[in-house]
Image (cartoon, rainbow, N blue to C red; front, side, top):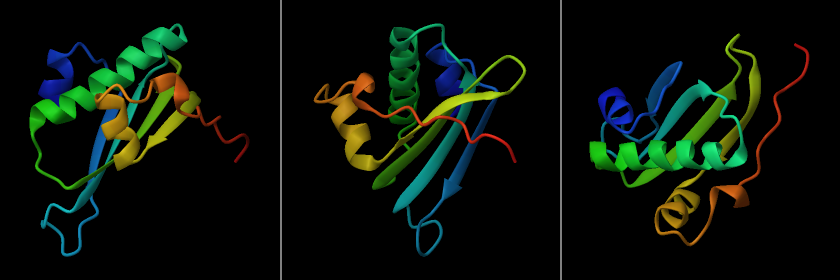
Length: 112
């Protein structure tokens, strides 16, 4: 998957993949988490999100349900915001029935 992201020019800090299928390995659903540098503007953020979704398609993982958590961070790894994208949203984005700007950018949790 990292190779597919790289092929699309996606720079990431970290990628994690969690199989949420029951039983494990039955390829029902997964969560892909990506920590990426925060783009300069909303247009670049949209391109980054679409490249991440496209890279998963390129990887042909074969899961029924895809869930994504894409976190944007500064160069000092401070979170700027994130998107949580469910299976219906991912399909709508890939079919151009929805735009990344339609997603809600979730602000980072303050404090801790």
